Image 1 (cartoon, helix red, strand yellow):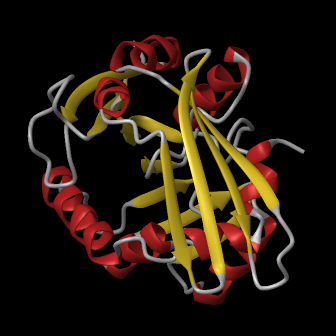
Image 2 (cartoon, helix red, strand yellow; image 1 turned 135 degrees about the vertical axis):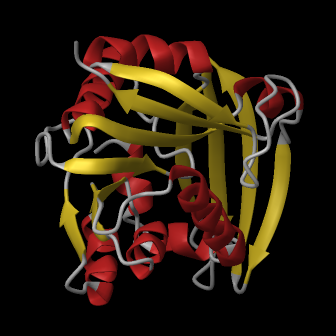
Length: 244
């Protein structure tokens, strides 16, 4: 299995990241919606939705939202929140899904760049574009390569209940590698790895433009302040699907 299938399906993933800021996520969604001004009844796709925290917020504003993720366990959790306008499916982001169907697609919280080979990233980019109607909008929320490189914390220890996570980070072969070693209440040592490509805005534009996606805006944080390559903590990109 790929690292993201092992790790995201693991219960330890949720233990490590249990303190993620839900208020920040909610405020980000509200900022995005205020900027995008989606029409009432717009169809939205949350790609790599995890357990559905962003999808739930989008549907709470009345939009018809579909969340997809490769993790069976994450989707099983997300399905507990399904409603008439909120739906979840197990789906690999590299594969086509509801072609030319959605008005908006979102890829939140650096949920891209997981693959070893360039061709898989290209397939995912094509899939993102293929799911959108013409003039549809794609929002990708990604790490900012230069900011992360300059502020990389090489070693860190995080305690969550009975679990002690020892995390090491490095940039290797143009990927940010995070090694996660930990022990829990059973004292059994375990290890997982995260690997995310150090993509830039130019990389995303290169991958998405052949699929008909044109960049129309960038932001540098969850308050939608302007993007600065060196200083911004995030790279939030807005693309529009345009076929001649």
